Image 1 (cartoon, rainbow, N blue to C red):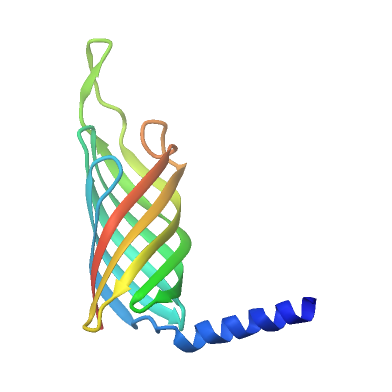
Image 2: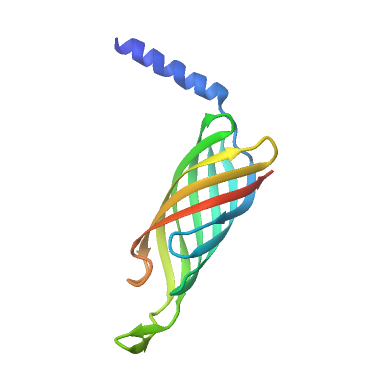
Length: 168
């Protein structure tokens, strides 16, 4: 019984490998969205292996309470679903800088200290690879602050975004 399950699993893996799409060598575009204010990122993806890639994102965050920029790097595994659809997951991290807007605390002007922060991130998403060199994606990137300060970076952040990239 166990031998038949192993054989069946091996055949399924071979079938998925035969129908799998390869990811593009390079992709450049935008990643738009965020959980706590509008954010835009310039996004670059580089194929590392047949089903692995590196993603680098340089982004800006604009919120009512702060302005920030951040640089994120992620290592991803890309797996086929059907047709042009693929899903991916990965991990990584990054660093950034934040400036807080002055606000009132106890009816007195208060401006938290801004500065450098470091974060760890995961990534999971789905993408569609068109027949022409366009890649659309929707991903969920949970982030948690490692080094920073209490006002911004040490909380858990759910970063959700839409990506539009040109492949070459």
